[in-house]
Amino acid sequence: MEFEKALEDIRNGKPILVYDFDDRERESDLTVASEFITPEILKMMRHEAGGLVCTTTPYRVAKDIGLPFMSDVFWDDCEKYPLLRAMAPTDIPYDNTKSSFGITINHRDTYTGITDHDRAMTIKAYAETIFQDRPLEEIRKEMGERFRAPGHVHLLNTSERILKTRHGHTELCTAMMYMAGVKPSATICEMMGDDGGSMKKEDVARYAAEHGITMIEGTRVIEEWNRFQERNHLDV
Image 1: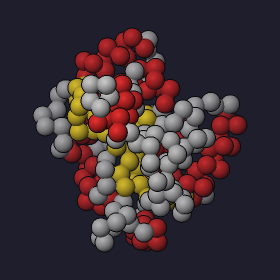
Image 2: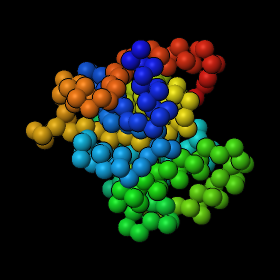
Image 3: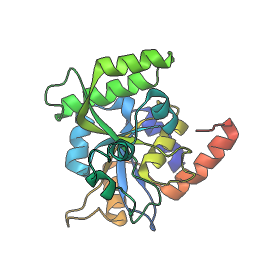
């Protein structure tokens, strides 16, 4: 029942909370479907969560359009900038894969790009653009027309097969969007605590109960995702 409530909340444009795992980041992310992002939700993320606001992209969509992992951009330019080779993300303590960070973008109609209004404009338009049922060449052209890079919205690319080789919030939250039947891009922000670290799981659960926000654990997401993929013959 709780899981179905989370999916219904996503469909209704409401944020939910997703906790990953006790043996991973041990973090909870406030997440909402990117297509429903608003300045008010971004304000909530800043004040109530406090982490980094990021927007996810399924691996195949990113690959087809031509949106790279930032680590690949750095690696491809390490001959010119050798320090980038030395700084390669090969020692992430909770992750055996490279960072999911992609590029950063701003909508061309934004001013500074950092305000809640500007970021909401960028994120919403991004979700509208990348999931169109149009030839890739047209989508790529529209991306160039509508967005500039770098910018203030951090994109995250999922691993090649969602929740098979990487189990981060990028994958967990994107999987939730697929299962909810919305455009499969999630906008996420880590819940930070007043002690300078991540908000503890029990404190997040208390916050969720007090604010009527559905909270889901990563183990449940993976269980439901495996069933969803098998039932729908989905390969993403």
